[in-house]
Length: 460
Image 1: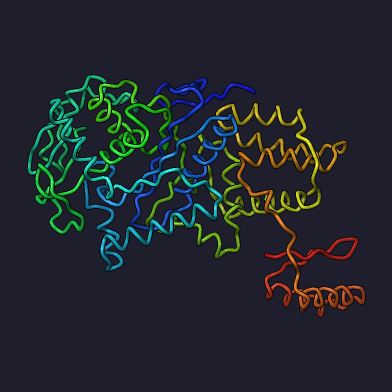
Image 2 (image 1 turned 135 degrees about the vertical axis):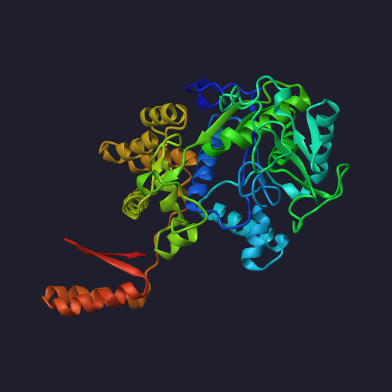
């Protein structure tokens, strides 16, 4: 099997993947802040992480996968500016922050199921790990990496020489600069580990701590929870590219300062954005807030979106348009139809295609090329159907399109009757009645496609 290579953001290059412990992988993925629905741009990250996990498992690694649920501490800025996003959601919907967290956590997990994304081994909620976060802050305090000001506890980034190495930050011009929004900071890049009641008086989630009653900053949760479940050092940390300059940078400095372990994480993997016209990033406000439910309302299957994401490498921006998504829908539907045509038993994996597929997925998860190999398989007229089918099921262990579970739709008798009447109308050149019968079939949730042999009925 080809060696697995992954692009490590920390090194800015592709590297051969070698885990810390032979045969096993610890993998931490930054999960959602559950104050609203995840939009399809967010969901691209989780599809990428799912493909990564599947490729690791394909390479016979045992993966321990942890994903956090941020239900406190993430402010409307990725730094320390603005109100807590959970509080923002509660005010918007006139609910408690706890109700908001429960509702949108469930909504997110529902989306994960629809997209055929594997559940992590551990879902880790920030509010379930306050004790671990406080303990980590105390360790940093004892080692001299913190200071208190204005009722809050800050990490002193000037105390660490290699701060900002992930983002390659230029700190020379910043060392004495303060942030206007927070006069308590000694340095621009310092960040809050613990907020007290001195800030955001209407904060809905608060806990007692040695520093006063308050709540944790956003960054400390991921360090505390990842180390609880994966140890003081682990293999892979994932997220979107927006996490590089602040969130992941701050995770690294607090974790390595607390443990003395370098590197804290061996491989950092980040996916690019889903973008709209003129390179506009999708956000949870404004007209570009598109959820999975939005796609379903427009009669797209969630797996159409998964296929759409697989068609572009995770490190490249993915341009979203309804036309592009419709093309992915057509391709995914065509793939399913072809799989149904060859579905059989007793086949074997085709070595020629299997080798090509492994070569592509092990080359930094090259899913566009992997999909191309799927279609090359169908073009080869010399292959036996059962061998093609068995090979495709092997590929689907990575692609995650659910090919094994495809079944032919059972067409209701009333729809079949209308289709036959329409065929008779077409043969009689009664186009008006033919169109009317097509509309009736569409209203019942089915499409009808004409062919030389007659017609094909498909569920929408």
